[in-house]
Every structure is written in C-alpha cells, then in structure tokens.
Amino acid sequence: MHHDSSRRTRRIGLLTGGGDCPGLNAVIWAVVRSAARTDIEVFGIEDGFDGLIAGGTTRRLSIADVRGIHREGGTILGTTNRGNPFRYPVEVDGVMTEQDCSDELVRAVRRIGLDGLIVIGGDGTLAIAEELSRKGVKCVGVPKTIDNDLGATDTTFGFYSAVTTAMEALDKLKTTGQSHDRVMILEVMGRHAGWIALHCGLAGGAHVILVPEIPYDIEPVLARIRARWDEERRHYTLIVVAEGAYPAGGTESHIAAEGAGTVARVGGAGLLLERTLVDAFRGDHWRRQRSVPEVRTTVLGHLQRGGSPGAYDRIVSIRFGCAALDLIERDQWNRMVCLRGTEIESVPLEDAIAQLHLVDPQGQLVQQARSVGTCMGDHWE
Ligand code: F6P
Image (cartoon, rainbow, N blue to C red; front, side, top):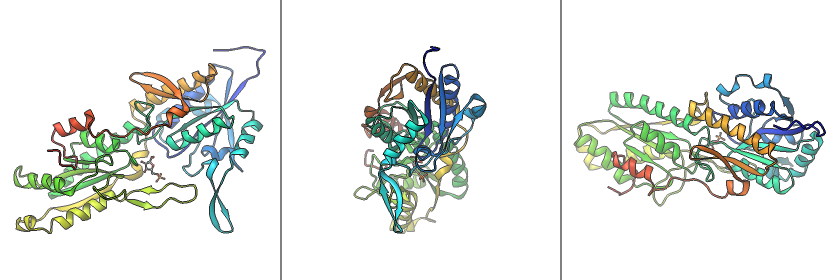
C-alpha cells in the first residue's frame, strides 16, 4: 500500500467488454474494494470502450456502489461486443461502415486524467487493449469468457458457471429423452472452442460429444445410437454439440454473417445434426425397426451467460480483480492477470492474445471421455 502525500491520487478506468459472463461483477467488486485501501480512484466506464467514445459515460465507483455485487451475474458497467474503437461501426450515407475512433478514446482518457485502464474481456477485447497500449494508453487485462479459449491462462472465469448451466440442462434432457425414447441434442456455446461441450458432456453423461476441434462423421454417431437400440435396449441418446462443431469436409454453421463492427454469429450446428440424423433414420436399418428414433434439439443459448457465478468463478474473479489492482500498484502495466495451476500470475498483453486455447484431440480430457465410452464423432473406436 502506498500513501505518499506528495503524490497526486491515481485514477484508473475500469471496463467490461465483449459478451458478458458470470463473474464480471465479482472482478469489479474486488478491484474497487482493493483500490479503496490505496490512493487509487476507480472510474467505471460504461458499455465497454463505448464509454470513452462520443456520448459515452464514466462514473466514480465507491465501495457503496459495488456492495454485494460479487454474487450477481452480468456487469453493472454494461458491455458490448460491437465497440472496437479501431473499427467502430458508423453509418455513412445510410451504409454501415467502420472508422478508427481510437484517437478520440485516447483524448477521453487524458481528459478524465486516467493513468490507465483495467480491461476485463475475452480475446477480442484484450486485442483492443493491446493495440491501445501501443498508442500509449496503459492497460491491465483480466481474462473472461465462458468459451475458455484464451491461451495464456489455465482458465477464464465464467466458464465453469456456463458448464454447470449446460450440465443441468443435460440432466433435464435425459429424463424427458428417456421417457420418450428420443435422441436429444443439446447445442452449447463456445465459438471455435469445444470446451463447454466437452466439460458439460462429460459431467452430464452425454453419449456423444461433438466439438469443432474434431470434425465429425455421422456414421460413428449413428453407430452409437444404433448400438444403444440394438444391444443395450436403451432407446434414448444424449448428444452435446458445440455451436462451432461441423461435419468433416463441411464448415462451421452461421446464423448471421459478419458485418461492420460485428463478428459472424455462430449457430445452427444442432439443427444441422438433427436433419442429418432424421435423413439417416429413413435408411434400411431403421425402417426394419419397430419405430425410428425421434430427434429433438435444444439450443441452450444465452442461458449459459446468465445468472450468478458459481463458487469457483467467484473466487477466480475476486483473485483476478485483486491481482489486477496489485499490478497497477506496482506500476506493472500492459500485462494480463492469469491463472497458472493454483497461482495468479501475469503475462505481457501481447502473449495473452497470441494463441487461442482449443481442445487437444489427443489430450487427456478427450482420451478420458473416450475411456468412459463417449463417442467423439470420429472413427477412433
Ligand atoms: O464468446 C462468448 C459467446 O457467448 C460465444 O460462446 C457465442 O458464440 C457468442 O458469445 C454469442 O454472442 P452474442 O451475445 O453476440 O450472441
């Protein structure tokens, strides 16, 4: 703790960017509470970087402003995943285009007198922080995302809360699937990474787990459903499909293409799989059966991003918040806090965004899923 009276009070900005996830408020809570023990004032920047661009707002955050919020989902600061200041969406002559508004942001940082920013975000938001740091805006990054796809940290907060929601959904789909003898498909989020699918599938007892890292063939999936009908006399099958999963030789399904300031919306993998299965069930083998299985698809969607953080995510978030403030106290900017084993450490921002963390098809988790009999949609068995 520094209390040097000759020094002016330091000011930092705090923002949440990209898609929200459980645990953001716990980071905010920890930053504000830790800062209250130092000479650092915290300014909350609203709606991601938008708070520092035309018409955006910031407000001083005190302990009273954050009381009890570490239990709550969402972010009291608001967020957006279309606010990249370097490629800001603006309408020119009725057409949406992208403009570089980063100079405006730098001016706002100076005007408010911020020494730097704590940026809580995923790969997109942290890449913006890194670009800003090269323009002289000092940043400390905090890794969040339900997708768990950041290379420089063992885990991001939000992930286990999302996995818990998806696991509970599977538990529910099991009972209705079992009652109706149906093939139940659950499509979960994760963008290009299969972490949520793999974890919730394992925890929720899915018979088939399809992830983007292992493009699937329909034959092994059908073989598993058939084996359950023919050999195990079990007439329901639980399938988890990551939204980014796709058939071998195919491509990721999108609900909407990328536009000015937005990335493509990934989704549709569940329904594609349902259609493929229903077509296959018209084949000979199934027609000889008493009846063919019915297929139902649930797209879990934003339920995975909502609600209170679980205990694990609360603790990681609080630890990340304290560690981010600690870096600033020690004047160590342009780094991202991260979890390595059981310790909170930090890495340079450029390392933080260097690599996506994807499921290793040869890794332990996939092997262990196979060991307990999970079909991963390939011809491994
Ligand atoms: O990155 C988090 C995430 O929830 C992804 O899993 C998903 O593809 C995407 O964000 C959805 O974004 P939006 O909230 O814009 O629909």
